[in-house]
Amino acid sequence: MWRYLKSAFLVSVEVPSLGRVPVNVLAATAFGILGFAQPAFWLLGLAVEATVVPALAFNPRFQKVVEAQALEVSQGSDDEKRQALIRLLENDAQQRLWALVKKCSQVLDVYRSQQAEGYIIESNEQALKNLEWVYLKLLVARHHLLNPTSETEESLSKKIHVLESDLQREEETESLRQSKTATLNILKKRLTTMHRKQQNLEEIESDLTRIDNQVDLILENATVQGKPQTISTDIELASDLLGGSIFGEDETAINALEQSYGSHKSLAQKEQA
View 1 (spheres, helix red, strand yellow):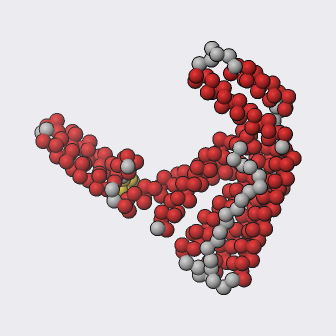
View 2 (cartoon, one colour):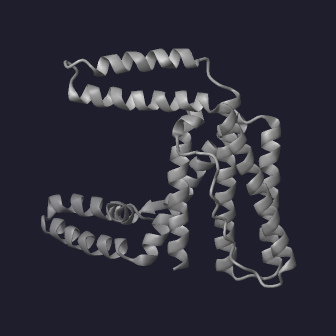
View 3 (spheres, helix red, strand yellow):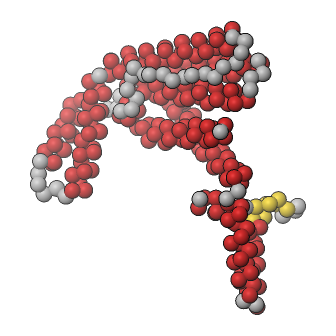
């Protein structure tokens, strides 16, 4: 709610030759200045702002505008992070991703040509974007498996041994023990990933092929069926993308985008409701 109140107080209107002017800020400033000459203006200004700002902040239409603006800003940042992940990939992986994106676009074009209802197109567009996101994560995971860091299984094992020895000592503080325990768990996951490298690669390739085939089927169904239908893109992956160590140094960007995709989906569902 604080976000809506802040946006309501800072709301601006377009004024010819002046551009966008923050009316509430100017009004509060004016009442503040006039109050030095007549203190009653301070009470009047407080009453006006206490009435106008909450009324605007609690307005459902205004709240939707605020959410849309926040989503637009977030989307711009998300696009940059996503493009950075794509640039990380080898040329063949990028071409494979663009081929999938093109087919997803064709699916939506078919539904638009069939004059499908707006909510069906929006729902299907979000579902296909989620599939594209999963596909990109798989490609990023494969990239890191094929291009490992300079760290070896031996060096990771040594670090694990040192941490385990440290945790056996009683003089460690509780906060330090928690930190080292978390680090130890991450190192163990990384070591497991190295041990399962070939299996992970095979599982990722299987998932990529499965998504390719699923989008092909969606495109064929959209072309053949005369009545537009809502697309279901729920897919159970053979590979384990939840163990963040598989994304290497891009784990932070992946996690940030993961949260953002979830919020975009929730907002789309709210607007449909």
